Length: 334
Image (cartoon, rainbow, N blue to C red; front, top):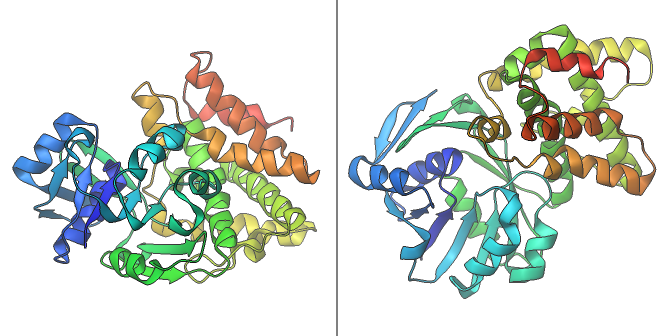
């Protein structure tokens, strides 16, 4: 069997190191030449909540020659159409492309590689790139979970599950769109606000001003899911749609105080979108909070807090606004 991770950045390097450490050959593929050189020379050094170094196979895209049984896609979504078309040529006839991206990328990937070759995985942990060959795992070891689903018939679901299981617990989701939406809810609130403020998920959760905004973003996500007929799946055993849904003031207060508890294992995380902005790159906010707005418009549900997050991030990208916690004040009049 031939396996690859395409887009071996922060998270891809961590996952690849775990798979290789389990004794399964996997190619880590990235366009970052210095990172690939460091992986070849020194191996993948994983720091943070763990600390180990693992020898790995690392390639540039131009060095790909073989066809793969499974390719785990871990790039940003902005180039998905181009990348999926490229990777299609490196999949075996019955090979699988499994998106480990945020948002809801599977429908468009399926148009390119075929529904029965398309899989998706919602990842509930985070990592930060710390330099060539080094990635920081920022989630607790007990929080290393995956929600896996098939877009089509899913003939390789068990095989992909075993591959991801080298790192953590894998749940094979029958209601995959619900699992995707649960992760989208978390990313819209905490990745979005981490990007806007420049802070960790923990700071966003603990500060009362940003926590109130996060709860408003979550509520919009829940309301949109209801209107769209989507039933969010539990995350690490917790029904987050039930925990954070509210109508009256009492339930809202409970939801407000639950947020720091729910995010405790992920307090050290910062958004990958924030990392992109700090490197002068455009990020994938349109594929996170923007998807909630898109579904909300389609279903007739207002999403002003998600829309404001999208707007603020675009202002930062365009140089009209700086990253900073004071951006929370921009939500005040919504």
